[in-house]
Image 1 (tube, rainbow, N blue to C red):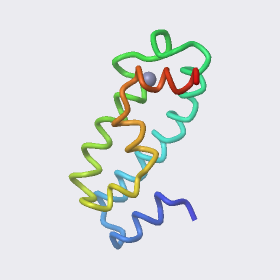
Image 2: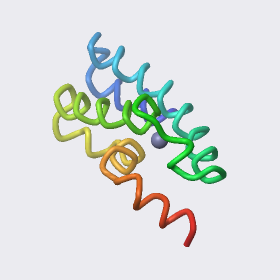
Image 3: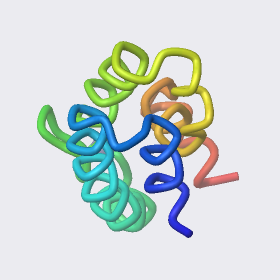
Image 4: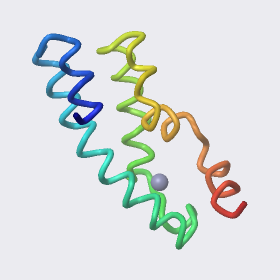
Length: 94
Ligand SMILES: [Zn+2]
């Protein structure tokens, strides 16, 4: 089962959690694609004020508000949201 849906289940189908998880899944797909573009073009060209990195930061803030400590299970979101873009560039090159 999709880990995001699994997480939503733990909240007993709470409406706000369900909506958040749906947005999160859409973001996840966008982010996976965006990372490929960043790997090819570099963050200077690929990233902008509206790229999925920015959305990720907002979603991570919301995750902690809505999910509390369980937000820490969102490893992909946390990694994308808390990692400065410059660091990502170094990692892609390494
Ligand atoms: Zn980006």
